[in-house]
Image: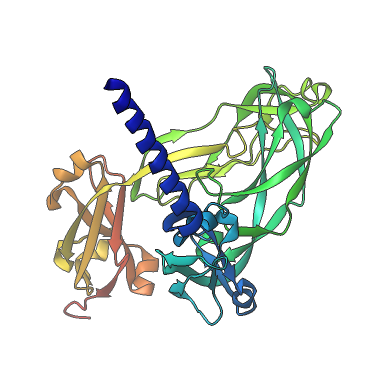
Length: 401
């Protein structure tokens, strides 16, 4: 009996397989299948360029395609048998929704799950960007690259306005190991990067490669002399002044060996009105350069507005000194304003009576009928400003004249 059951089971399995094979061969049932990441070809991009437009953002689009067909047909196809395209003709600046058209082999039904793609179109611009060389690897101690020349010095970057604006410079990477003391010329790939050093895609460069010429220089640190001229305006207070006392230079050993000190051009701080870095101009012999990190050496000056207090004085409050006839002189200017500046502590306690405005008369004053206003004080003040600086005076007639 057990043997009989086993026999029937085997027969049933054979019949099931036969039926399945019959259906597959003769019926060939329909089946659905997803083809992922089919690339979308953008058509008529050249038409946008001719109109002064360019694509920004994502330009490499893909779509997932659901296909339906007979099992035998689906088994023969791959993603290469499908094409997806989006025609950009007629579109303009802004966010555009472009229909995607799918082409498939005969006998295959296509369901496009991404009917449209979003394409951003902007103004096409072209801007020249500086080339900067980045050396990869380590130089030995006391040595770095010098006499660096690139050809070209600038590369034109073209593309969508926002993409081109994001490009800070063109980077050319050169291996430090390829440089020699006699000099080397290396061809490097041109790469558009932003301020963070990240690559900016979707822009076109006028030159794909940069020829970089450079040589190995010795580095030396030497004293630096800097002369500071002038003073900041009285309304400002210098809270910090950092003047570099040394600088690193680089060049051939035979040139830098004889340099023991360098001087910068004098730095005038009289026009400084805010915290600033004042670049130093350092004269160096031919063949000698500032070392890496010292190209922008500067004097750092930190200033802040001083505290001020303003007082008004009438003509009667202005003292008259000088000539014997002062009793017969009167001031006709109605009032003056005195502004005192200084440290916050002094100005906070300053009172009107701490300042004594006066005029010191002489013959010239009588002839011009004007006199300069002076201010007498004992406090530690930084500056006194009087408005107006001169007052009008008048000689009074006495009885009997």
